[in-house]
Image (cartoon, rainbow, N blue to C red; front, top):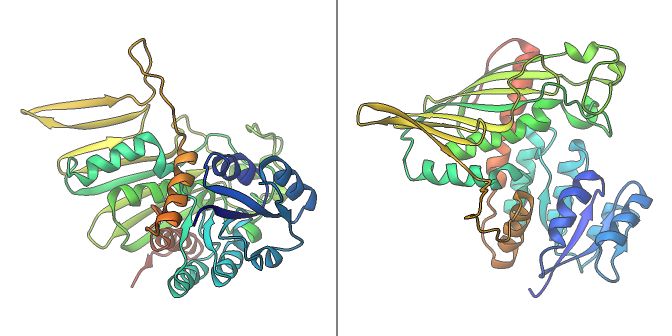
Length: 359
């Protein structure tokens, strides 16, 4: 394969702000096909990012019928992820789908099954794995520096950061609020760092508290309480089959000063780590406790200002490498499916008031 020819389905902010700029930086990629429910938006994306001769299609089905397309990126609302991704896989395309994998766990499992059956690659856009601190922490965990990780926290907390555009507040379209939107990033990052994808039981709670306020202070302007049909915050405890415990906290609006997003805290038998103000590693050596603060944004005259690769660029580059070299993507569909299963269990636990057990 000389060039990877990409079709973009959904040309909103996540496509034009993340996927398309990163794809355009790769010599072996041509973005040749565009579809969006807004034809004007698709044409704007084509004009800015498309290869010579790139086309806008009337439907995603028409785009998938185009033999010239090798890879499809799905950047649409959550409730369409499974339908479009499955259709793309069936059409013989490799697929990168934005997070979360699907609105429901059943849809996520269907996506895994179709990817296996068709032999096409499927990955999900969990870009926080590709941050410098995440990559470093994964390496030291894999080398055993923290020992057995038996307690962890997945942090996705905003004090006031409710997205008031698009369909973010629409439960029917999204399947949930901050838990499925940003909590999914923190949960994926934490499970990946632990390399632990076997949940045993989940207990969760979700809240509609600050979402009811009129004219609330918010980074993106006040929201309409009548249209705020998803939770404003959610919290959960997950006990894994090996006995490890993971706490999840997710909010768009919470009265707290301890706000941190897409971060993890890990506690192991030999040491611990957190992503508070950078990456901190703690432990005990020679009968004394220590904390090492690692710096990833180097400054000073001795810093070599070489080419810096953003986490989004690295994510997309490694995905294209997997397609070109026929290797497994960094984010596997099986891993992403477990994240969706846990998210759904948290929502179910909130609805029923009971713990949800996995087989």
